[in-house]
Image (tube, rainbow, N blue to C red; front, side):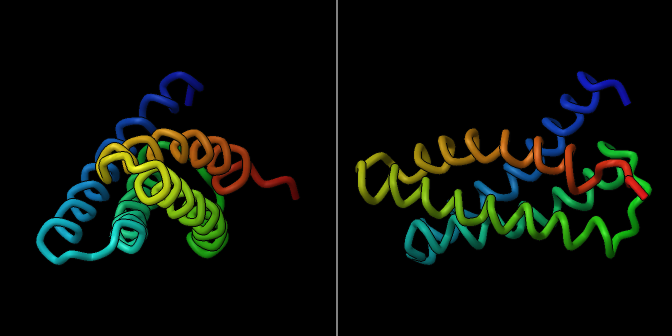
Length: 128
């Protein structure tokens, strides 16, 4: 797939995953009083599951099995998970930004990490 088209597809998948993520974050924080960082991390996991499913099917033509790609995807998501928690804590809890603003900023930053890591490692062509 052409790089630009792949990036746009990744972005579209990211929009769907982000809507899942942000709506979960909002509901957990607003209606269940879950602290910002915990709500962000639960939401990130749900968005991540959707992201794997859609990116595997539509964005990256990978010859890797689900087992191979799956653990790599999980490893990238663990880093993104940590970055999400760090940035939400930094922006919302330390800098006093509104929780949703902190979540938007953290999502924008982690998006670029995720794309690069998935393209170059998770779904990359095997080098046997």
